[in-house]
Image (spheres, protein in one colour):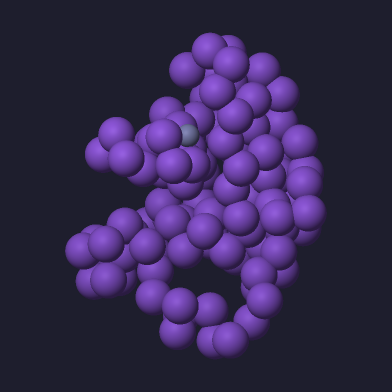
Length: 105
Ligand SMILES: [Zn+2]
Ligand SMILES: [Zn+2]
């Protein structure tokens, strides 16, 4: 699934997909779902798919930059300077936090 449009919104990033579905990802959710080699190994990330809130050290996370990586992924730079995660569109679609997607899991 490819995005049709990627936009910055107040909450984080909004992706409109080719099938008409719209996903809105809060910056904090994206940061906590970071799929980089380091984050992926953190036990709570392994267990729940999300980094613990405590790993953000109380910082309010925002996105400084969202950069397309070829045709398959986005790379985010977060306000805590973390930027090693490559978010494949397939992965982003999987973690869509909307009610429809969440109840489908
Ligand atoms: Zn990471
Ligand atoms: Zn969804």
